[in-house]
Image 1 (cartoon, rainbow, N blue to C red):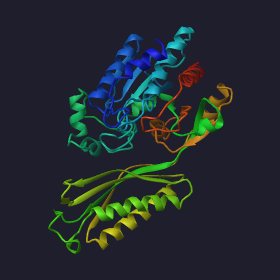
Image 2: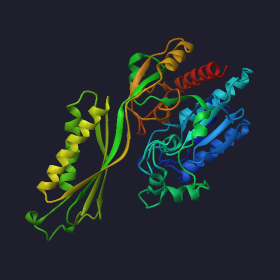
Image 3: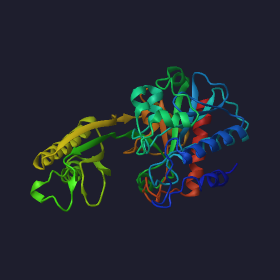
Length: 399
């Protein structure tokens, strides 16, 4: 099948009329439809498909076994995300298998295309949840108890999807099958645009994490409560948002973002009793990332005290700086005739697996430089160049 045909299959799934773009969250109706599409496409190719104990989907060319060459990505999105983040890597993996078969290639090592579950953390809050569970990077009991904004737990979502959840957690035997993992992804920035290259390799990922700041005050009536009598948690929450920009600006290469604020109970004429603020912070090193977060928390605690409120901070996820296997990266760069390598500030399943198996990433040029938004884009010719590069890489590694 052609790129155009496979891409068209996904174009109508999970469109978000309010936000624009796509909203496909782990194990919701849209993402389950995407997963069904993947299983059907793998079946057309005679690939053996199974869901592992953590809800990740594996499609095998050959019998699963040690030394396998694995590619793939994810099918879920952030709220109102772009079309390419995740699905491009899955579509490219299937098309690379098609191309290798058309060439008459017989892999000496098994090849698999994988779909990781809940990569974005858009539903349950923890990014790369499927790969974290697979590698033992997150406690399974903690993960199963995670709840989405509607109060549905991960355990309930897995049950609804028909996936066993009693043995969720680290799967050393599955990890042991992976001889190398190569994830193709649209670039989430303008690095390749500036370099004039359609395809590149990843060198590293910034240290990054998510923190939930809960400010507690006193809920009350917006009209009958005098300003001097208030303990309004929205004020220190707002100060934390401003502190995020200030703190990040003092550390070279740092980013700090508040993308979600939820007041409780959330009425227009109600002083909130609590306000939850979700902070995303990233920097080139763990020490820099921690320093940025510490400064934001310090400012939040001071603002809370000034307003007669309290602050509780919970770290929801964290990944240290990832430096991809330089030997594998250089080997793939040579196989591709010398493509550029560049760092990224975006987290990926490849970054989680890199702690246990040789891992690499291919990036496809994004002319807008925009990601996690509807304007995310990749030109068709660049997507095809990505498929060609991935095909070359898989052929090289599986020979």
